[in-house]
Image (cartoon, rainbow, N blue to C red; front, side, top):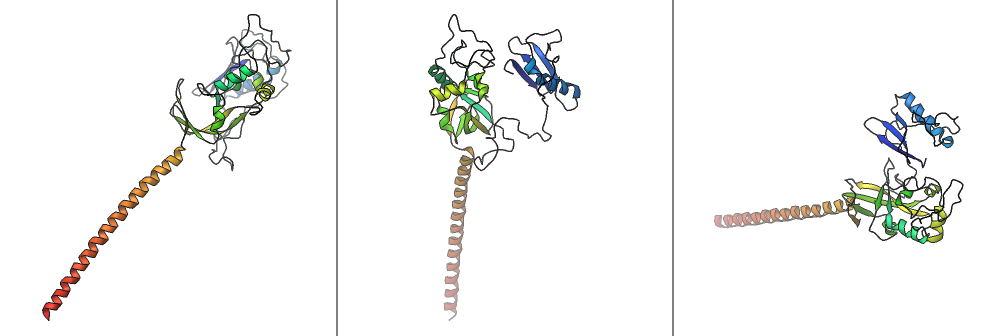
Length: 299
Protein backbone atom coordinates (compact mmCIF):
# COMPACT_ATOMS: atom_id res chain seq x y z
CA UNK A 1 0.00 0.00 0.00
CA UNK A 2 2.89 2.34 0.69
CA UNK A 3 3.87 2.25 -2.99
CA UNK A 4 0.46 3.57 -4.07
CA UNK A 5 -1.15 7.01 -4.16
CA UNK A 6 -4.93 7.29 -4.30
CA UNK A 7 -7.32 10.12 -5.08
CA UNK A 8 -11.10 10.33 -5.19
CA UNK A 9 -13.27 12.67 -7.26
CA UNK A 10 -16.61 13.42 -5.57
CA UNK A 11 -18.14 14.80 -8.74
CA UNK A 12 -17.55 11.65 -10.81
CA UNK A 13 -17.45 9.16 -7.92
CA UNK A 14 -14.15 7.99 -9.40
CA UNK A 15 -11.22 6.37 -7.55
CA UNK A 16 -7.77 6.67 -9.12
CA UNK A 17 -4.78 4.62 -7.96
CA UNK A 18 -1.28 5.54 -9.11
CA UNK A 19 2.16 4.12 -8.55
CA UNK A 20 3.73 6.63 -6.18
CA UNK A 21 7.24 6.38 -7.61
CA UNK A 22 6.32 7.06 -11.24
CA UNK A 23 2.79 8.46 -11.25
CA UNK A 24 1.67 5.59 -13.47
CA UNK A 25 -2.12 5.10 -13.33
CA UNK A 26 -2.84 1.56 -12.17
CA UNK A 27 -6.58 1.78 -11.66
CA UNK A 28 -9.40 4.18 -12.40
CA UNK A 29 -12.89 3.05 -11.46
CA UNK A 30 -16.28 4.50 -10.50
CA UNK A 31 -17.48 3.46 -7.05
CA UNK A 32 -21.20 4.21 -7.43
CA UNK A 33 -23.45 1.30 -6.48
CA UNK A 34 -24.65 0.87 -10.07
CA UNK A 35 -21.15 0.28 -11.45
CA UNK A 36 -20.84 -3.39 -10.56
CA UNK A 37 -17.98 -4.07 -12.98
CA UNK A 38 -15.86 -1.17 -11.70
CA UNK A 39 -16.52 -2.11 -8.08
CA UNK A 40 -15.41 -5.68 -8.80
CA UNK A 41 -12.23 -4.34 -10.44
CA UNK A 42 -11.48 -2.35 -7.28
CA UNK A 43 -11.99 -5.41 -5.08
CA UNK A 44 -9.77 -7.53 -7.33
CA UNK A 45 -7.07 -4.87 -7.48
CA UNK A 46 -6.67 -4.55 -3.73
CA UNK A 47 -7.16 -8.25 -3.10
CA UNK A 48 -4.09 -9.18 -5.13
CA UNK A 49 -1.75 -6.42 -3.97
CA UNK A 50 0.45 -8.80 -1.91
CA UNK A 51 1.42 -10.50 -5.17
CA UNK A 52 2.00 -7.36 -7.25
CA UNK A 53 5.22 -6.92 -9.18
CA UNK A 54 6.80 -3.63 -10.24
CA UNK A 55 6.39 -4.37 -13.94
CA UNK A 56 3.59 -2.91 -16.01
CA UNK A 57 1.97 -3.48 -19.35
CA UNK A 58 0.25 -1.25 -21.84
CA UNK A 59 -3.07 -1.47 -20.03
CA UNK A 60 -1.54 0.22 -16.98
CA UNK A 61 -2.45 -2.67 -14.68
CA UNK A 62 0.72 -4.72 -15.04
CA UNK A 63 0.43 -8.05 -13.30
CA UNK A 64 -1.95 -6.64 -10.69
CA UNK A 65 -4.98 -8.49 -12.03
CA UNK A 66 -3.16 -11.50 -13.41
CA UNK A 67 -2.40 -13.12 -10.08
CA UNK A 68 -4.69 -15.36 -8.08
CA UNK A 69 -6.55 -13.69 -5.20
CA UNK A 70 -5.20 -14.62 -1.79
CA UNK A 71 -6.76 -11.92 0.39
CA UNK A 72 -10.36 -11.09 -0.30
CA UNK A 73 -11.19 -7.36 -0.14
CA UNK A 74 -14.81 -6.24 -0.20
CA UNK A 75 -15.93 -2.74 -1.14
CA UNK A 76 -18.59 -1.49 1.29
CA UNK A 77 -20.53 1.73 1.69
CA UNK A 78 -22.86 3.39 4.17
CA UNK A 79 -26.51 3.63 3.16
CA UNK A 80 -27.22 6.67 5.36
CA UNK A 81 -23.86 8.36 4.90
CA UNK A 82 -22.94 8.41 8.59
CA UNK A 83 -20.89 5.22 8.83
CA UNK A 84 -17.40 5.75 10.21
CA UNK A 85 -14.59 4.21 8.14
CA UNK A 86 -11.75 5.58 10.26
CA UNK A 87 -9.37 3.67 12.49
CA UNK A 88 -10.20 5.30 15.83
CA UNK A 89 -13.33 5.52 18.00
CA UNK A 90 -12.26 8.72 19.80
CA UNK A 91 -14.55 10.97 17.77
CA UNK A 92 -17.76 9.20 18.73
CA UNK A 93 -19.98 10.51 21.52
CA UNK A 94 -19.50 8.57 24.75
CA UNK A 95 -19.36 9.03 28.51
CA UNK A 96 -15.70 10.03 28.18
CA UNK A 97 -16.36 12.23 25.16
CA UNK A 98 -19.69 14.05 25.56
CA UNK A 99 -18.60 16.39 22.76
CA UNK A 100 -18.48 13.52 20.24
CA UNK A 101 -20.59 13.19 17.14
CA UNK A 102 -22.58 10.38 15.55
CA UNK A 103 -20.19 10.39 12.57
CA UNK A 104 -17.11 9.96 14.74
CA UNK A 105 -15.20 12.19 12.32
CA UNK A 106 -11.85 13.52 13.51
CA UNK A 107 -8.80 15.21 12.03
CA UNK A 108 -5.24 14.23 12.86
CA UNK A 109 -2.76 16.96 13.85
CA UNK A 110 1.02 16.49 13.89
CA UNK A 111 3.58 18.99 15.20
CA UNK A 112 6.57 19.16 12.83
CA UNK A 113 8.88 20.18 15.70
CA UNK A 114 7.89 17.07 17.65
CA UNK A 115 8.88 14.96 14.65
CA UNK A 116 12.21 16.83 14.36
CA UNK A 117 12.98 16.27 18.03
CA UNK A 118 12.32 12.56 17.68
CA UNK A 119 14.42 12.49 14.52
CA UNK A 120 17.39 14.15 16.24
CA UNK A 121 17.10 11.96 19.33
CA UNK A 122 17.10 8.84 17.13
CA UNK A 123 20.17 9.99 15.21
CA UNK A 124 18.39 10.21 11.89
CA UNK A 125 20.52 12.93 10.31
CA UNK A 126 20.38 13.78 6.63
CA UNK A 127 21.54 11.00 4.34
CA UNK A 128 25.27 10.96 3.59
CA UNK A 129 26.86 10.85 0.14
CA UNK A 130 26.96 7.07 0.31
CA UNK A 131 23.88 6.06 2.29
CA UNK A 132 23.31 2.56 3.43
CA UNK A 133 21.18 0.63 0.97
CA UNK A 134 17.64 -0.13 2.15
CA UNK A 135 16.30 -3.41 0.86
CA UNK A 136 13.10 -5.26 1.66
CA UNK A 137 15.17 -7.73 3.68
CA UNK A 138 16.91 -4.99 5.71
CA UNK A 139 16.23 -5.13 9.46
CA UNK A 140 14.33 -2.35 11.18
CA UNK A 141 17.26 -0.20 12.26
CA UNK A 142 17.53 3.40 13.47
CA UNK A 143 19.43 4.54 10.39
CA UNK A 144 18.89 3.41 6.84
CA UNK A 145 19.86 6.28 4.56
CA UNK A 146 16.41 7.88 4.40
CA UNK A 147 17.41 11.05 6.21
CA UNK A 148 15.37 12.86 8.89
CA UNK A 149 11.85 11.78 9.75
CA UNK A 150 9.04 13.48 7.87
CA UNK A 151 5.63 14.37 9.34
CA UNK A 152 4.08 12.44 6.43
CA UNK A 153 5.20 9.21 8.10
CA UNK A 154 2.50 9.81 10.72
CA UNK A 155 -0.30 10.42 8.18
CA UNK A 156 -1.54 13.82 9.39
CA UNK A 157 -4.42 15.90 8.08
CA UNK A 158 -2.84 19.06 9.50
CA UNK A 159 0.88 19.74 10.07
CA UNK A 160 1.77 22.57 12.45
CA UNK A 161 5.15 24.26 12.67
CA UNK A 162 6.74 26.96 14.82
CA UNK A 163 5.54 25.41 18.09
CA UNK A 164 7.72 23.78 20.77
CA UNK A 165 7.87 20.00 20.53
CA UNK A 166 5.07 18.12 22.30
CA UNK A 167 3.02 21.31 22.82
CA UNK A 168 0.05 19.55 21.27
CA UNK A 169 -0.16 17.07 24.17
CA UNK A 170 -1.02 19.99 26.46
CA UNK A 171 -4.10 20.68 24.35
CA UNK A 172 -5.96 17.49 25.29
CA UNK A 173 -9.50 18.36 26.36
CA UNK A 174 -9.10 21.97 25.25
CA UNK A 175 -10.08 24.06 22.24
CA UNK A 176 -7.55 25.46 19.81
CA UNK A 177 -8.01 27.84 16.91
CA UNK A 178 -6.13 27.39 13.65
CA UNK A 179 -6.93 29.89 10.93
CA UNK A 180 -10.70 30.35 11.11
CA UNK A 181 -11.33 26.83 12.45
CA UNK A 182 -11.92 25.92 16.09
CA UNK A 183 -11.04 22.36 17.10
CA UNK A 184 -11.50 20.40 20.29
CA UNK A 185 -8.44 18.21 20.92
CA UNK A 186 -9.68 14.80 22.02
CA UNK A 187 -6.70 12.53 22.63
CA UNK A 188 -3.13 11.64 21.81
CA UNK A 189 -2.62 9.37 18.82
CA UNK A 190 -1.26 5.93 19.61
CA UNK A 191 1.03 4.80 16.82
CA UNK A 192 1.12 1.41 15.12
CA UNK A 193 3.59 -0.47 12.94
CA UNK A 194 2.30 1.35 9.85
CA UNK A 195 4.57 4.26 10.86
CA UNK A 196 7.56 2.05 10.09
CA UNK A 197 6.85 3.05 6.48
CA UNK A 198 6.98 6.57 5.07
CA UNK A 199 5.21 6.12 1.77
CA UNK A 200 5.34 9.77 0.71
CA UNK A 201 8.90 10.83 1.60
CA UNK A 202 10.64 7.53 2.17
CA UNK A 203 11.30 4.30 0.33
CA UNK A 204 7.79 2.92 0.83
CA UNK A 205 9.22 0.02 2.83
CA UNK A 206 9.40 -0.69 6.56
CA UNK A 207 12.93 0.44 7.43
CA UNK A 208 12.41 1.83 10.95
CA UNK A 209 10.88 0.49 14.12
CA UNK A 210 9.12 3.66 15.18
CA UNK A 211 7.49 2.24 18.31
CA UNK A 212 10.88 1.12 19.57
CA UNK A 213 12.43 4.51 18.80
CA UNK A 214 9.64 6.45 20.55
CA UNK A 215 9.68 4.25 23.63
CA UNK A 216 13.49 4.37 23.76
CA UNK A 217 14.00 8.12 23.38
CA UNK A 218 10.76 9.49 24.87
CA UNK A 219 9.52 6.88 27.36
CA UNK A 220 7.45 9.55 29.08
CA UNK A 221 5.29 9.83 25.98
CA UNK A 222 5.47 6.18 24.95
CA UNK A 223 4.03 5.16 21.58
CA UNK A 224 2.12 8.42 21.11
CA UNK A 225 2.71 11.11 18.50
CA UNK A 226 0.11 13.54 17.16
CA UNK A 227 -3.40 14.30 18.43
CA UNK A 228 -6.94 13.69 17.26
CA UNK A 229 -9.35 16.63 17.18
CA UNK A 230 -12.97 17.23 16.25
CA UNK A 231 -14.21 20.32 14.44
CA UNK A 232 -16.28 22.58 16.69
CA UNK A 233 -16.53 25.57 14.36
CA UNK A 234 -15.72 25.02 10.71
CA UNK A 235 -13.94 27.39 8.38
CA UNK A 236 -11.06 27.51 5.91
CA UNK A 237 -7.49 26.35 6.46
CA UNK A 238 -4.61 27.48 4.26
CA UNK A 239 -0.88 26.91 4.38
CA UNK A 240 0.64 29.60 6.58
CA UNK A 241 -2.46 30.20 8.73
CA UNK A 242 -1.67 31.20 12.29
CA UNK A 243 -2.21 28.92 15.27
CA UNK A 244 -3.98 30.94 17.96
CA UNK A 245 -3.50 28.16 20.47
CA UNK A 246 -5.89 27.40 23.31
CA UNK A 247 -9.15 29.38 23.23
CA UNK A 248 -12.34 29.32 25.26
CA UNK A 249 -14.99 26.79 24.39
CA UNK A 250 -17.11 28.65 21.81
CA UNK A 251 -20.29 27.04 23.16
CA UNK A 252 -19.46 28.25 26.67
CA UNK A 253 -18.54 31.67 25.30
CA UNK A 254 -21.87 31.93 23.50
CA UNK A 255 -23.70 30.78 26.64
CA UNK A 256 -21.81 33.33 28.74
CA UNK A 257 -22.62 36.09 26.26
CA UNK A 258 -26.28 35.03 26.26
CA UNK A 259 -26.28 35.01 30.06
CA UNK A 260 -24.85 38.53 30.10
CA UNK A 261 -27.56 39.75 27.74
CA UNK A 262 -30.18 37.93 29.78
CA UNK A 263 -29.11 39.62 33.01
CA UNK A 264 -29.16 43.01 31.29
CA UNK A 265 -32.68 42.25 30.07
CA UNK A 266 -33.74 41.12 33.55
CA UNK A 267 -32.33 44.33 35.07
CA UNK A 268 -34.16 46.48 32.50
CA UNK A 269 -37.45 44.63 33.14
CA UNK A 270 -36.93 44.95 36.89
CA UNK A 271 -36.22 48.68 36.60
CA UNK A 272 -39.32 49.21 34.44
CA UNK A 273 -41.45 47.26 36.93
CA UNK A 274 -40.11 49.32 39.85
CA UNK A 275 -40.82 52.53 37.96
CA UNK A 276 -44.38 51.43 37.10
CA UNK A 277 -45.08 50.39 40.69
CA UNK A 278 -43.68 53.68 41.96
CA UNK A 279 -45.89 55.67 39.59
CA UNK A 280 -48.94 53.57 40.50
CA UNK A 281 -48.24 53.97 44.21
CA UNK A 282 -47.83 57.74 43.84
CA UNK A 283 -51.09 58.00 41.92
CA UNK A 284 -52.88 55.92 44.53
CA UNK A 285 -51.66 58.14 47.38
CA UNK A 286 -52.76 61.33 45.58
CA UNK A 287 -56.23 59.88 44.99
CA UNK A 288 -56.58 58.95 48.63
CA UNK A 289 -55.66 62.46 49.75
CA UNK A 290 -58.18 63.98 47.30
CA UNK A 291 -60.95 61.75 48.56
CA UNK A 292 -60.04 62.64 52.17
CA UNK A 293 -60.16 66.35 51.45
CA UNK A 294 -63.52 66.01 49.69
CA UNK A 295 -64.96 64.05 52.56
CA UNK A 296 -63.66 66.64 55.00
CA UNK A 297 -65.21 69.48 52.98
CA UNK A 298 -68.63 67.86 52.98
CA UNK A 299 -68.61 67.92 56.72
